[in-house]
Image 1 (cartoon, rainbow, N blue to C red):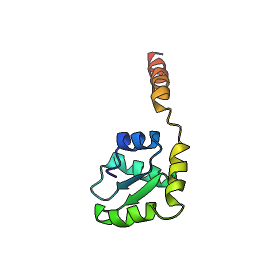
Image 2 (cartoon, one colour):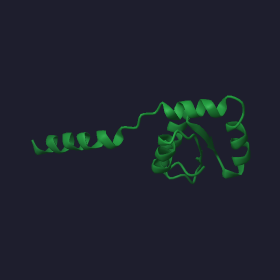
Image 3 (tube, rainbow, N blue to C red):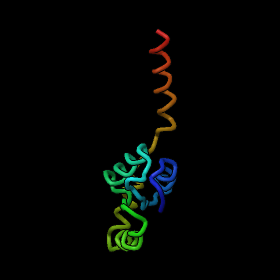
Length: 97
């Protein structure tokens, strides 16, 4: 439960845990996309305000929901740490030409 920061979301997903995150006008612009990603991949619940946390927790714990979120989280294979060096190498090589 927290803000839609990439580190927080990545760590939870790596552990197979669904997330509850907040997205509203105060959310940093670069983190808004993370909330959209959470929704699109069904790995958690996005709330407008932490005042909704009680209903979000109740929804997550409702029959079938938690296991669905856990299955979705477990299916994510985050390989960014291995892909980024290759992408950077391609960028550097293209600029060297």
